[in-house]
Image 1: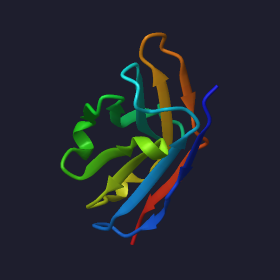
Image 2 (image 1 turned 90 degrees about the vertical axis):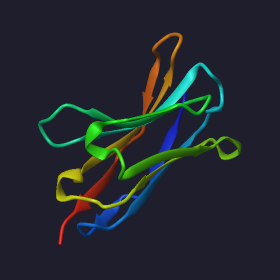
Image 3 (image 1 turned 60 degrees about the vertical axis):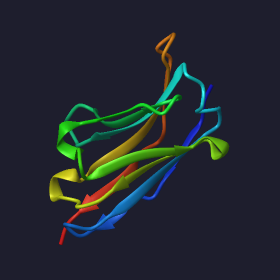
Amino acid sequence: QVQLEESGGGLAQPGGSLRLSCVASRSISSIITAVGWYRQDPGEQRDAVAIITGDGRTTYADSVKGRFTISKENSKNTVYLQMNSLKPEDTAVYYCNFRYLTTGTTYWGQGTQVTVSS
């Protein structure tokens, strides 16, 4: 079992910034693991925003490339999502996801609300 604790959501103005944090109860440095941020609007599917593997490889959704940056601190088992140039369409509940790449076993955090509005 892996527990994930998210923080950093809230209200931001268009063009503003927020940083999300996800603390995992297990190591995030193993090459068989990946931690990602997903987001979900009410009534919509949960979509991947950014993912970072244990060895540091990153992938981003096209909609956030150049604006969002995923990073991690292995010593703190923490993954960050720096969100800049926020747009109203970034409004969603953001979820942290931990996955074992070999088995596909997945764990989710409880989610944190991000609202971008003037």
